[in-house]
Amino acid sequence: MNHLRPLLGWSLSLLLLAPALDASPAAQLLRVYYNSKADVRALANSGADIVRHGDKWLEVVVPSDDEVSTQAAAEIQRVLARFDKREVLVKDLDTLLDPFRAAPDLGVYHTVKEAHDELAEYAAKYPEICRTESIGKTFEGRDIEALIVGPQGAKAAGKPRFLFCGAHHSREWISIEVPLALAKKLVTGYATDPAVKALVDSRVTWIVPILNPDGVTHSQTQYKMWRKNRRKHANNSFGVDPNRNYGYKWGGAGASTWPDSDTYRGASGFSEAETSAIRDLARREKFAADISFHSYSELVMWPWSYSEEHIAAPREAIFKKYAQAMAELNGYTAEKSSDLYPSSGDYDDFMYGETGALSFTIELGQTFVPSESEVPEITEKNVAACMFMLKNCEDPFPRMAHNPPAASEPSGFPVEVSLNRELWPDENVSSVSAVYTTTDGAIQSTDLPAVAGQTTIFSGNLPAAARTYHFEYTSAKGETVRWPPYRDFEAPPASGKGR
Ligand code: 0X9
Ligand code: ZN
Image 1 (cartoon, rainbow, N blue to C red):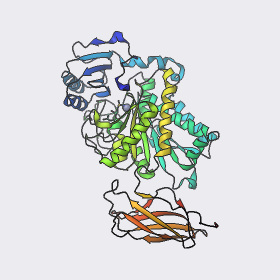
Image 2: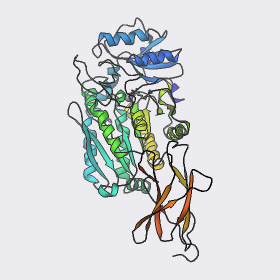
Image 3: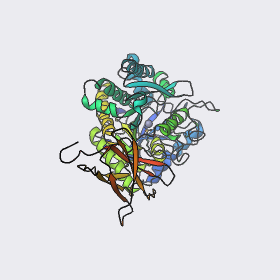
Image 4: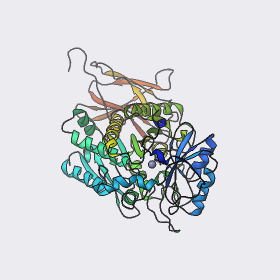
């Protein structure tokens, strides 16, 4: 499997058995070998940042002296001592980024300004299919920029919505490149590629390449392996981990209470501009499906992250099916987020847990910032995963099933729907109505009674004048549920001579 591949990228001369576990002057990358999941959980809970795992080993970032307090460092060191075998893979992680910083404007990697300029250029050049919007302002006052691709204005209503975002974590520069490459594919492919055009015309795609522009700016200009945002704490340390700050099951395992820890959860759920921007956007837009990109590990992950518990089986089967389909496209491994260790306050737990979206985290590549020559391949195969999601995940947890009839008679045509109780066990539906439009534009509805002896199958007849139709019911919460969520079925053609 990919994540078991040897670390060809690292210099082998740095592979030494760790001597004394003194706090390090520079941020280091260690590989430690574990015997029990309890040790892994303890390490995650110590505030250390676990970045990759194999069968019996994992890679962990040990922060530098000037990044963490003695207390936070001591806690990580205390837990590290539980692992008998430790190797230093990279003695000074900051130096990994030096070649990129040496290139003008970070070479193929986008600076924050370049990325945001690119979005603005697309909006200026292709105003019929995209626009930019700031979804929030950061601690240091930067805009969190989004590109919204799809029909604009009133034409966007009723279209399925998707979200792709990068750079929760500052040093994970490659996670910016995939959303940007997706933006480019959608806006430049519109005129030439009918498959792209069909997706752009029928969906609204939100692209947020840099969720954490303060942190990315710091990582790109201050020569630091910085992970978090740049909130300034009272004790003069900095940063909240945006991927521990979401307010769904916030404050549990795998997130630190120390402000200077790399995985600090923040003062409260959604205390940060980055996470509250996503919260407000997701509550408003109600995304069908979404991906948050990180690096590294070559993984496609689904919830839950906060706990080793599973999502209800029929729904987990859907997560797994799509994770595996995307993993086939990018060659990564599909797994549940908490397979290695739980971490709370994560993006996808909120996106699925609160808003019901089909939400994934993808860990790109085999190092935080892959070499320039690897970037095109990484972006291409992960854009393919995004395109797959756009194409296939508009209604990932369907509430009903319906086979449109083949033909209509002068007396109309029969329709039948069955409720998906497996995916929606809590929706106690006693009646369903069919809502249809007629040739003269009128909207009418008719009640579909339950089929005799059935509680989940409803059927009835629609008049020949019906042109398009969908189904509706009132949920247990009193909300009107429409299915399919974004479109109507076409009425069947008249049998015999035609209309
Ligand atoms: O720890 C994170 O936030 C993500 N990994 S990273 O190395 N990019 O920081 C992983 C998020 C998914 N959650 C778990 N695997 N628990
Ligand atoms: Zn990350």
